[in-house]
Length: 353
Image 1 (tube, rainbow, N blue to C red):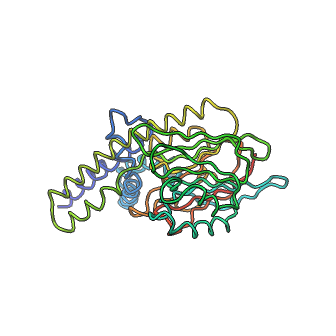
Image 2 (image 1 turned 135 degrees about the horizontal axis):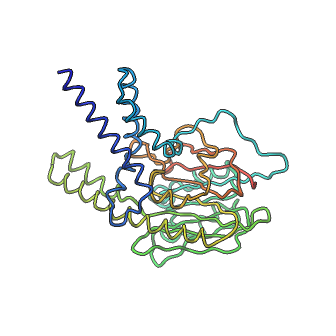
Image 3 (image 1 turned 30 degrees about the vertical axis):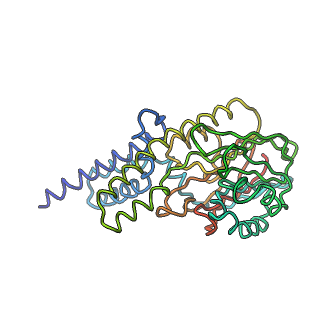
């Protein structure tokens, strides 16, 4: 029996190490034509948690098998520091430097009815006193008109928003800095959008991107899945699960294509960059790695603790980001757990380097 248990744990160790290696490969391979490689990236955090437990267990028993989960953990070190940060010494804005505060927030149509949470979010933003606010899923042309939102957020005098032929919610950038020009970026076969703006920040022309990449479609299928499970309808539950997996597989490719387009824009331009938004993907993903490139992830620069931003699905997903060029230095990075949306906002404070 002891030998059988030993063999079982060896097989479990190998299986979770392989899953961790697949998660590592997720961000380094374009999912087009091989969408399966993206799924391990979604569950990489719990997979690494199991690897950590296995590493500690094998260490207790002083077994050479401890090296297998340890290698899996070290291989994904970059992902781990994109999810967890320990900040011992606080950073400060140097004397003579002017602070810049940026907030990104998926407002979920102001909690679906188009106006319910707008006053609460506006009050919170007013207290935060940001310089730039990037909103996603903002009902600029449907339940609320853009001028109504702008009037509520009048303490941020400059703004621009995406425009499209549909009534779908879009992206908005509010700013204390003058917006010199802007451009809506619409993606084919998708209601998701990006918004590009050039603004004058302390005398520099800064490119600001507000992205909302292709949704996962999980929330659209989840009620059907839960209802079938509650009613004991196994066939319908299986069909819903397969439908969810199929939609997710298609959306991995859509997000990769959208990330490639933003990367081309980043590479084609010059000057300082601030890139915000809801990527709908984790730091293990091709989307994140492609867009980030050699830019600085604000959480890794000055964040602390566990960096999740999506308030559903067990709160293990970090999918909202503020990323910037070396022209900026971060001081603080926070993500308060407000209940105004299914996402948490991200608040970054820094300065021009």
